[in-house]
Length: 106
Image 1: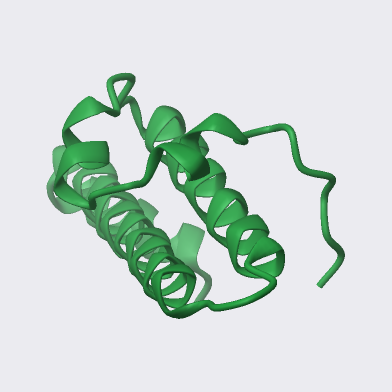
Image 2: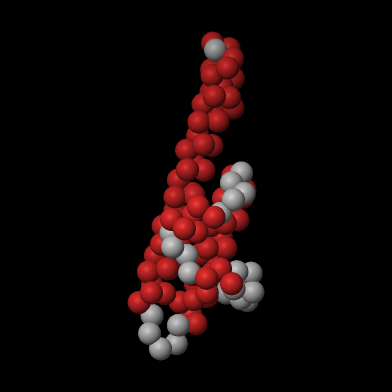
């Protein structure tokens, strides 16, 4: 039995359940992925705070993580970032360079 067969069976019993189950899974995946992106921002900001000497690699990593997080938030529908900038204490030096640093291959 495929996923499509399962959804068809669910729809026959309760039509609204088929899409509700799928919508629930999508919402759960969105929450999980935005949480992972936020953890990455927190990790890279902590590394930046600990960086001494040549901070450029840590700064580039933080900028990339924050940019990815902002894009992710916008795709989900969150357009304002001022609250998370304050909550996560994102430094101005990170915000000032968003989109300006070259993409790094991983």
